[in-house]
Image 1: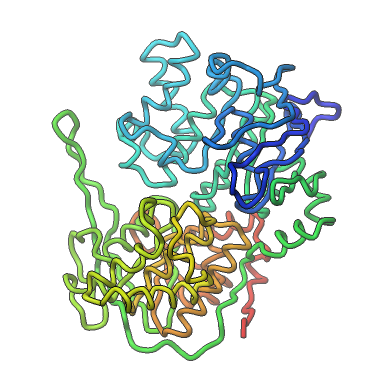
Image 2: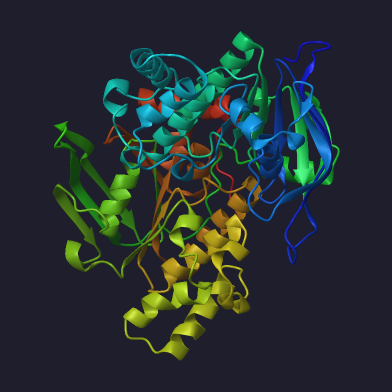
Length: 541
């Protein structure tokens, strides 16, 4: 907890940041003031667009083009960061000031090995030799629970899973034990067990070096685990601030109350409906291996998936749950025909492996990377229909109807992806996946990056669409709380193998495998709403 009378390591006063002309409001951040003391963890909480990440980026002086500071001060070490030169900021970044970015795929250089990137703070800010830098990099990789550091240190970011890339980012930020650590949604892409490990790691740094931590998140279920104080932001303004225990127990502002009400719990909330129909998907002993290496590296065979068998019936949702690197996304890509399986058999309805592209559609985790930024939304939706020989007029009519179905006005077809919020972009991706009337929809971490309120809306949308269209759904997730809300059955994966499978209600109430129990324990430790013995069926009629 915060030391009594602790000196602020960061003090923000009256910070106002202007948005570009023609934006939906004048300011990204308006008259925001708060502080972070040495040895204190402050969580900034709010939905997408609330200004929390803009506030964090302004501290690092890394605002996006078009954003500009209008007024206020950001005091660190007694000096206003907003008035420092860029050269002075470079001396601070990665040294006394460090940041864990939300999206490691764009924050990490694709042309440098992860080991070299972890060594970078030591190379820039210390006199360490090459051997010592490598030793420290390996120690940091072990600290953030990256598997086989000696092997991964020579890999490039694209060769790691999303969760592994995030852990590389965290290792870089922790390298020099900064006085202020800014963590911008650092656990969004991580499974519950790794979330718990990373939070413990951040706490350890805070206690060991008396660092101040500014933790940006949209997930209030994490706040009770890590925060001393909470700052709640809405539409660029600070609407509530206080001790974490007080804000969580007795929120005063209606917006804070709404955020807390949207937190998913480990209760089964699957819509009551007719029993599932005939098999849509049959996966039999699916295995996938990759061979890595090359001219200057030892050839190595990696088994991503081993002997996986599962089925999905019409109108049924099966959740495939596991940690980052467990192989669940590889299974999804094999089923969708995006990756060639090494062995096994996949049957969708009566369709063989080579001719199932129309019957299976996939919604990916990150809508920013799924939609072409150069294309209008209308073109993204119409393209697949046009490729199937449907006329332009009919294709646009169908695309407009699907947009309406997912809650987006048809007029939006003339707009570009960057003109929508993250939740709206994901709805557009769902509409695009439905254009070809698939019988099976794969949702690969489709809600993990969304705010809890938007997440709840998208989950409800998916259930409504499934109910109306009678499609099957394979729902890939690392979040057991989300799996509990949407699935009929749950299959738990670890290291490429399905460890346990069963009905959602039974598995939530009485997990059998030690790994499944560990996942549940981690989920409860990160703010699960009920205990395992209290897991219940909550009908949503």
